[in-house]
Length: 217
Image 1 (spheres, rainbow, N blue to C red):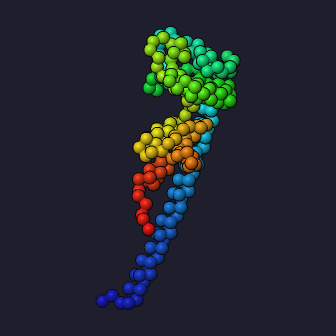
Image 2: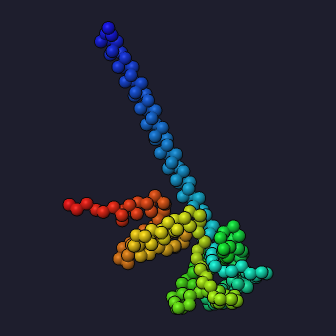
Image 3: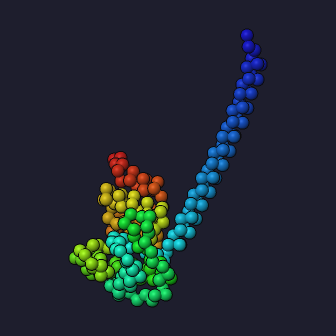
C-alpha cells in the first residue's frame, strides 16, 4: 500500500514538473509573439520601401502590342491628349511589363509630382468625357477604340489587397474603393470615414462584421 508520504512526494514532483513545463511553454509563447511582431515589422518595412520605389511610376493597361511599336511616341501622345507638359528628360524610362497578362506599359517619371499630375489629368479627362473615356484613339492607335486604364503602379501586396477590396465592395454594398499613394482605401458610404486597408485579415474582419447580424437587446 502506498503511504501518504510517498503520495505527497509524488504530487510535489508532478507539480514541480508541471510548473517547469508551464514556464517553458509561456517562454515559448512570448518568444513566438516577439518573432511574429518582428516579422510583421519587417514586412511593413519592405512594403514601405517597395511603395517608395513605385511612387513615380504609372501603369497603363489595355494598350495593344503592335509590331515595331514606339513606346516613347505613345507616351508623348498620352501627355498631349491629357494636356500635361512633360519634358523628355522628365521621363526616366518606359517599358512593358512582359511577365504580366496583357503586358501593361510602365512609365517612370523623375518625380512623384509629375506622376500625380498625370493621374489627376486622366481623372479629369474621364469625368469630362464620360461618354468616351480615355481610349486607344486618344493615343492615335489604329483600329476600334479600346479603353485604356491608367493608375498607380502597386506593390504585389497592395495589388492583392485591391483585388480583395473590390470583391468586398461588389458583394457587400460598399460605395467606394480606391488607391491613394499606394495605399488601399475603402468607404461604405459618403457620410462614413475611409478605412485604410492593411491586411487580408482586416478585410475578413470587415466581411464578418457586415455579414453577422447584430443581436437585438
